[in-house]
Amino acid sequence: MKVASIIILLLLAVVSTPIVLCAQKITIDADAKTVDISPDFNDIDVHLNAVKKRPEFSAGKKAWQHFLRSNINIRIPFANKAKPGTYWVLIRFIVGRDGKLRAIGADTNCGYGMEAEVIRCIQKSANWIPAETKTGIKVSFTMRTAVTFVVKQNDVTIGFE
Image (cartoon, rainbow, N blue to C red; front, side, top):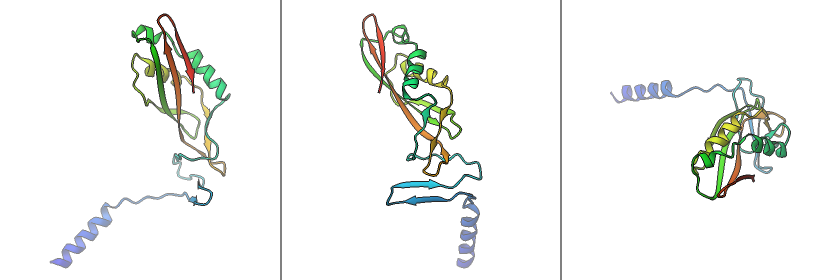
């Protein structure tokens, strides 16, 4: 009886264990504090949080700030009756290895429609230049962008960090 129980448990363990087939090789260099991957033959979207080259807006950081400044509707805080003050909005998004933005969401909750407006604006963005590993392989990467709304009695300004 004990042998049969053990065999059944082993069979259940083998059957319930997922089999993962992956044609990738991951190399960890502890001295250089880097992680590198081989080309992804299985079309797997690899996401790393440490890369050689971070993603960037196709025309650079100043162009990204200009894009945000030109597309964010600064009347939104007034329309939602925001009280005068400084509001720091932090939005995160993933730049895919194809440069497309996805999983855009807010890390803050200032309210008054400010996070929703910045998200709406970022959704209109053109593709970015994706992140790359040390060997030039494009990977997904999570970015964050901060927008500061300064609401005054009759004026709203925005700034970037």
